[in-house]
Image (cartoon, rainbow, N blue to C red; front, side, top):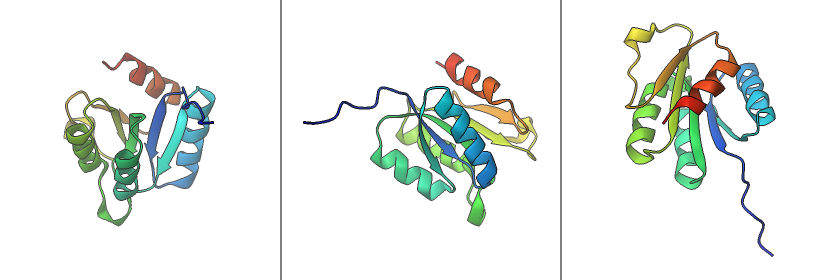
Length: 123
């Protein structure tokens, strides 16, 4: 007998700093989300390619191996237009962030409550 699909919204968290990723995962799971997490752009794209339920992408801009969350956001917007995208960084001024259409930037340190509320307000 097939299982019903998970009714929770799915968020993909892309963060290479383990304790930040774990804190963010715990927060969004408690808030009622299904969690997927990656530590690089290539891992994130693999999730996006295989899981059509992803509705939210929360990604750090600076990722390992020279990968960039801004590039990830551009790819995600082009290939998966409905995904809601928020980027974050501790060391890039907001006016220097390249955001895709309908993307938002939240600087670190951030309030996860504010991040969740920003996702809820996105069209």
